[in-house]
Length: 424
Ligand code: BJ8
Image (cartoon, rainbow, N blue to C red):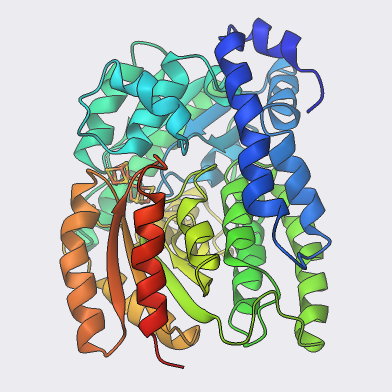
């Protein structure tokens, strides 16, 4: 990594503590990623983005601020990035995915809170992540109880705006979400000093749709029998999508997909033909949480699809680009976003339908339903997920884990045994 020490110091980060993270990350990345065989050449771009994770993009965000632009940190795929970009702001994902930050979160949160929340709070309080320092404002949302209460703690640190997400999907809830997006638009306009027009919103809708289309293209390629890319690499790309510049990311991902098209034509696979095709469903895997994919893919499995917010839920469905007034565009945004099936909603049968459909589309041999410890909504919904899959005759295993590596060996044994029993 180049020398970004001055930038980190200027941001008020705890650079001594941050050095420990900078030492650990390349090792973990090397062990999990660079040790894979036959990776696509174009993964070099994504390797570079990770190797400079606390350098290149933070610098760009600071440059944007120097020109008067604002940066908004988000924690959930329901927050419409389109509104932020339409006001010449930048939205960047902030969810913490490392055990490194959990201790910092536990200083103010009870231990029985999900690690994603603890890591996100810890990254801010410990001053060990530039993204958390750079963001002018955090955008929270009323999804799970843990997040809702964590916003109150983070609000002492940084301006924090909370979007009130309905928890059902009746027509009146979709209307309520459209109203909430309108309020969000007003706040973003006020904070950035820029007016959102139908033209600027149309451009940002296309910008984010194009990112979704590139991610969908990548995932289409994973339906092939010869798998041109590993699930670990696909997860990494999805994680990077949350913070990289969207135009550059889309361009680079499409270039990678061109290479993968060639691989498919030539039947180049990164897995042995006997590898079992696994779908992962459940809680999101924020960067650098690569644990489960690595375990699966070193135990005879190939992850070919993720029904998670760092997978299909992030990019499925596009916003209608044909609307010409801001009000109609906001209704189109509300329609698209309320199509996401998070366990925070009740009922959430759309998610079960999605999982069953994905099993067919991706020719899945078995499903791993993963839950981050203390995530109550996904944990409880796991009962219905597993029951529905069993009724459909699809093998499934439920896993609960966190960011700690202490259960890695035990998980390896359980997942290895599960993959072993899957039929050819
Ligand atoms: S749309 S999954 S990104 S809320 S923080 S719910 S793991 S206890 S992240 Fe999420 Fe939006 Fe839903 Fe997706 Fe559970 Fe932890 Fe809560 Fe979490």
